[in-house]
Length: 386
Ligand SMILES: Cc1cc2nc3c(=O)[nH]c(=O)nc-3n(C[C@H](O)[C@H](O)[C@H](O)COP(=O)(O)OP(=O)(O)OC[C@H]3O[C@@H](n4cnc5c(N)ncnc54)[C@H](O)[C@@H]3O)c2cc1C
Image (cartoon, rainbow, N blue to C red; front, side, top):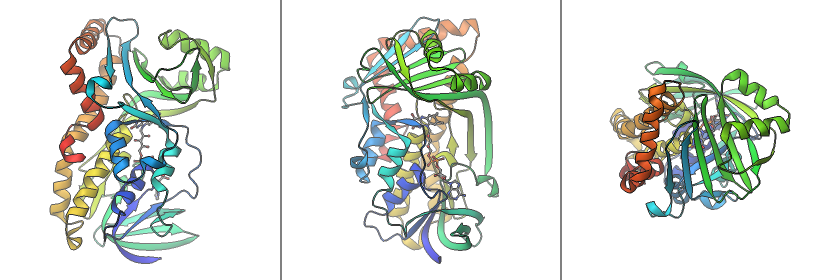
């Protein structure tokens, strides 16, 4: 395998696979995706996909492959130990649901389904990128190989970006971990998602199957103990921490922990190169924005590629126009998630009332709720994306 393609994608996670899918629907763009893993392996993450992401997945023919997705019809936002709460409803925004909840593996498989093994190459690990020649060296079946491309897209979650000259990587460690797992309460979830802010970090319950998928943010040490804790004690701690809004917690499965940090690159393009998804920005999971933003990166980049003559793919003009089209949405996503953590995860007493007033104001003003829901569903520049 030593070949020339129009687009080479490094990383076949949900974002890389979505790009391959968006480019492979009958267009004359040649492409290859290098994915390091040979089989996806179980990933415990369960993700909230916005209504906008669902429409995009429909458009690229992947949504119909997602067989187990639970709709979110209502989002309930509150803060522990303070007044104020806001409730967002799908019908108010004129959509059938605000989003859907599905497993990482299920979303990934749905995107990969139907991609040929010549396009989506598993077990291929990218090692070296040479932008001046447009080549990527990779390991495949025990051998070193090379592909040359007009455009190299990094969708590898940010693991290789450090290699690339001219791209600055910004980092902020939140000193938090997310503890995730499936939990059940003694009553049906009613398709309500809960986001509860506490001084130690947000706790989210996403309706999933006949229970909830939990994302509990905590300090690294406490998170480790929550992962290892005996089931009964864990359920009691969760009840004390979350309260009784979703009912009584009666069951849970194995838990896992993920360290949380903000990481983003500037710029997101270089010579013959574009970054998408977690490679471009890795966000705190509060409000479930990461993959949704990554899919909007893909929607915009695939449009830029398909709209330009083949011999101009990867040209500086095309890439700078693409980066410009993504600026507002990605900066908005980065600032929004980071501000939520700064404003809600602290013990400054005066902020308690400010937070409460903010939630109460959102709850009392239907136009504000509608505006907010639409930004969460479609990002900051919807017209450019769908
Ligand atoms: C606890 C938690 C909860 C979350 N909840 C939500 C949510 O509710 N909603 C939401 O939208 N987002 C959520 N996210 C974020 C979401 O998981 C990510 O945004 C999404 O997985 C990014 O996908 P990606 O394809 O960019 O990167 P990844 O999922 O990291 O995939 C990268 C791929 O690249 C491959 N790769 C790496 N290096 C190489 C290499 N050298 N060569 C070839 N292949 C390589 C990897 O094997 C992998 O398959 C959550 C994240 C966490 C941690």
